[in-house]
Amino acid sequence: MPRVTKAEQAEALAREALIAQALRWTAPVEPDVSPPLAGAPLATGYMYNTYSAAVFVACSSSVGHAIGSCTKTTTQGAIALYSTRERALRALRSDLERDCALRLAVADRAIAEAAQREPS
Image 1 (cartoon, rainbow, N blue to C red):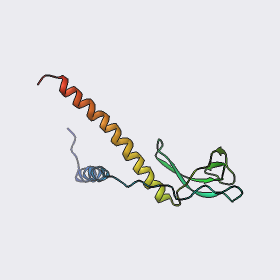
Image 2: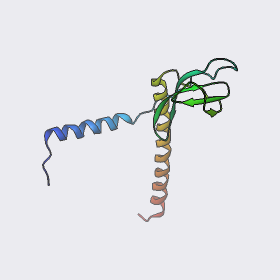
Image 3: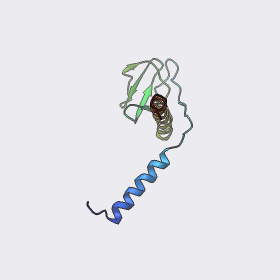
Image 4: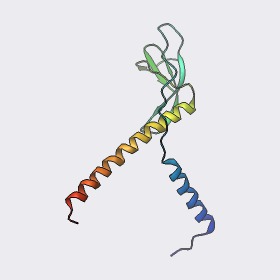
């Protein structure tokens, strides 16, 4: 068995501490930049994608929105945005927590059902 250095042990402990600290609930964060009214300039801010766990610069008009380059909208549908990257990241974290909790709940239910079926 290979020897583990003190530095590797410290790194492993630090990683486990980060994982333990990550198990907490974050308050939901709502977008705070509304789409503009017709004829008003583009609203700019941030949005996130839960599946890629990424935050993007975005803009919205009264009828469309865009991600990244915000000189004009490229996708139909106005959207509300987050005013800061931090707000968008907090909202992303909150959504990821709920998604992970739901997945854990499904696993917990399957474990409970298996335990009831199997003889003691």
